[in-house]
Image (cartoon, rainbow, N blue to C red; front, side, top):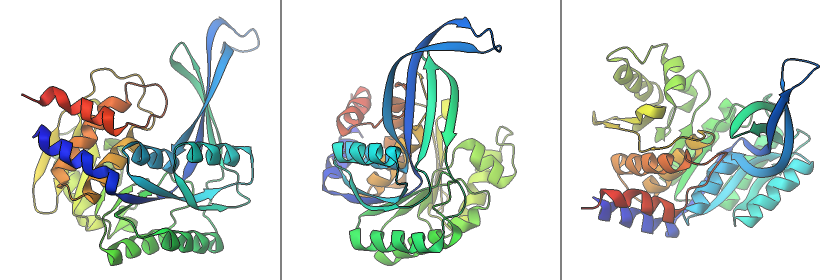
Length: 325
């Protein structure tokens, strides 16, 4: 089993994937708390350092590149400092930004203040309204010119890039090219994702989409089947936090994977890691079950770090080694 996983991981280096969606910058302000403010009952954080990381679709791309696969990122950014920071981070990681379109919308930036390894507050700067068709046409054109790809990821953070029309266009292109297209969904109406190869909602998102309380017996399987029916996908991978993952396939196969996380510091960006590893494995010809198993191992690595993390091929290899006899 481990040998098979190693072969899949080794094949990542020959793949090229596209990522389309809501890219953002994750800004972390680190410090410590010694007192409560006299102005309001809130902690006073004495800042000590700052880090900037890729977030959203850009973090998905970073995870794919860390696996040694090539990746092209398509999305929107503003004409601002955050866009410059994102561009530098992408360049540092060898990620192609040929599909990024400049617009008057501000680059989405999430600022987290962390004290003593605990998130105190988060402040977001964003415009999450629908993107105008002119910009979407440019985005679609950039994606076509940047291809061909072995797989496509649609990273939907609900910031306006993946409109219904854009989704239909991207899914249609992927199906015409015969490549797997996987979506990390945010929309409440999952019928808008109809035609994707697979999708990777978390348990809360799946429950809301199906109006089910998944904790009740039998409802997890009902949710999986409902999402398969609604999207006509081949497989649905539901991430369940400390309960691991559940994979439901169109052919009736069902797999429940216990969590591989032994220590959890931060779940920020774990979903990006899951969809990156899962889709890259599918693009290389892995089965849904094997792709899900590798994604589960990768998630176990990602949550051990504070902030968004890109799991490398070497780290993923190390994570599966304990299984070896």
